[in-house]
Image 1 (cartoon, rainbow over the protein chains, first blue to last red):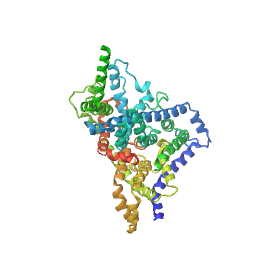
Image 2: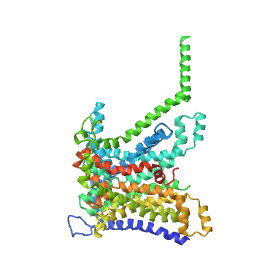
Image 3: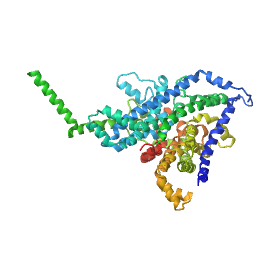
Length: 285
Length: 296
């Protein structure tokens, strides 16, 4: 049976291998030639010039920092708030089912809708809901997308992923050993001690899952940026994914964009190596 | 005497108060506080969606009124406008076909691979799983130009076929992972028993694994369906008027129509309603899928 079982792997491994290797090979080829869509017919070999251009572009450093800031803050926000909210709604209370449905909803909102909803209805400096709240407490409304572009994107993305974290933590909390908690309470453990020594260790594994999945999806946030700030003002909210997009489709420079894409692949691999150490421990049961 | 008496009184009050928190009324108060807090957080997170839903029934003037209007005569004009302007049904059909077909084909390819790795593990199994996950970490934008060029060369730009292939491939690693961890939960003894009885590979899969792992397969499918429905990057870049999905349709409202809040809201509600309602009904299954079965 073993050889047949090996054969069953072929479609998945083969198609994924093609999906990886063909674009990668083409990207490597494009990255060492001069390939600008505005200058047809000129495909001279230029060596590493595209790479030099991409790396020395002042936007490059900003984009890396923005990518990491976006990734780090969204993960921090969703994990911390996610654990707190999950603890809040874990025990039964009137309307628990409805509350859970409301909490999970933003996860199903597609990124383009999310972006437009926040850009116009929440964050508009004149008509937006947030500006009304600001005025209600006597503060000057903020022009979110112009003054705090990266923070605005972080808020949108965190709003989308917080429900996901909550849902996973709720599920994990339901598997907690109640007798253990009861015993700790009897022994006079404070809420904080229970949390630190019982709840948090129990959640460790699901926190790892949340961090891993969010990392996969947040490294390449795109729609939220392209539909709201278009990376601006300047490069204030440009991440690596959006910078490459700008080079390729707005600058028509396929060569430089391909060099950038290889950097993105490198970044992804660093993140993957980090993840494998994180998840690898969790995988051995 | 007096201060002592007072301190005694105070101590008793504290004691009574502390007692109260474990007493019945105390528990009720704690429950009330917790309920109010939970409802507050839930409504806060849900508020943007609610606001959008309400706005979609307003006129444009009511939509941008400051302070926001909450009592008004609802109108359906925005919804009819959306259908007239951009043929909502065509985009909805594209979203439905691409997400459903890509999910089904993906499951057909992922399930055998997951089965093979879960029940016939080799030295390389873990490596293959990690490699699959690492392809998922590659930002889609890195593959944009090559895929665009290939699709153009094959005359597949703006076709549902291209989107189906791309959605399927980009969800495949997650599918294999989830199915793998669900299959792993099936005790191998059951399979051995089936094999002793002379079950073939196919009948083993159909009569033993499929029924046992149905929950896991369903949750994997559901999650990939949601991801494909909401996918924006490839649909924005590979499609136009023919194969555009709802995610692409909404992006076209970006500007200047973004200034027309109620029409934007109506279009958005139409775009997210099917999948949000679908998600409500399947949230339990979804969690199982999302956690790779690791969190129970």
